[in-house]
Amino acid sequence: MSERKPERRGLGRGLSALMAEVTPPVEEGGAEDRGRTQRLPIEQLRPNPDQPRRHFDETALAELAASIREKGVIQPLIVRPKDDMFEIVAGERRWRAAQRAQVHDVPVVIREFSDTEVLEIAIIENIQRTDLNPIEEAMGYRALIERFGHTQEKLSEAMGKSRSHIANLMRLLSLPDDIQTMLREGRLTAGHARALITAADPSPLARKVVQEGLSVRQTEALLKAPQSAPKPRKRGKDSDTKGLEDDLSAVLGMKVSIDYQGGGKGTLTVNYRSIEQLDRLCSILGTPVSQRDIGVDR
Image 1 (tube, rainbow, N blue to C red):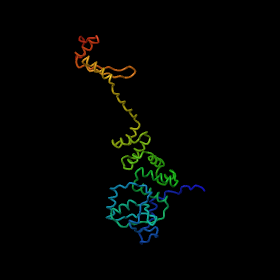
Image 2 (cartoon, rainbow, N blue to C red):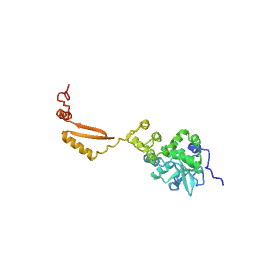
Image 3 (cartoon, helix red, strand yellow):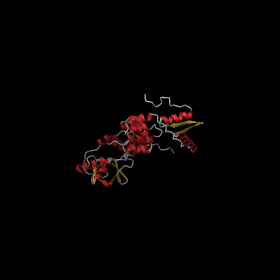
Image 4 (cartoon, helix red, strand yellow):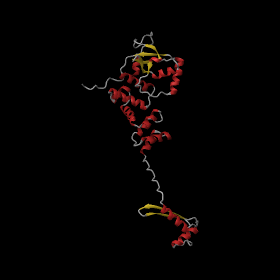
């Protein structure tokens, strides 16, 4: 038995072409009256589980709900019959806002669509009307490619987007989950994220970009700048070294510090607080300084 290949079809019908076919409101009909605008109860509709949009802006929904309370739902939703219900193909935002406005029924156009057509229309509606965030848009493109066998070239022609735009968006799905969340929430732009893709450890850099409000250009410069190596931690002095420092300090009456550098080498520092202390130290070493001009302002 040959393996079933992903369904292929021509994309590009688009929401505008679809809506152009919707006839003006006519006599109300039953569910079987396909292609006509009619009204259905809110509870008979359900969202499309493959809807690319996962985040709906609360402020925008509240504004739309206020408009619906005043003027009603002007643009009909597009739905298809599904398991004794009607699945929303286009217009989920209007359906959600209508519930907030406590509207009991909404205008719809019932159509027969395949799963591929439903996903295509959902993506196009969101991209053309209310922009998806970059991750949602990328996931929509990936679904069309992986589930339905479409190519980036075909998507480019259908969506009116360049192939590089689609490819760059889909690359964002390789970023860690925390960065994808920043993209969904609008704390990072797609430009920021594209710059971070090449980083070995992008998450700390992403947090820095967000915290400091860096631009895309500044983010790119941050990635090009050599990352400074962490400063080596100073090793604590052992008890023998500290004991010798204390003994020398007591003998000289001055603070003595010993810094061992390894290999039998190191630095011994004697701190004096007056010319008299320096003179005493030099006398111990056999080099008096009383006749010199050290410490004399010129």
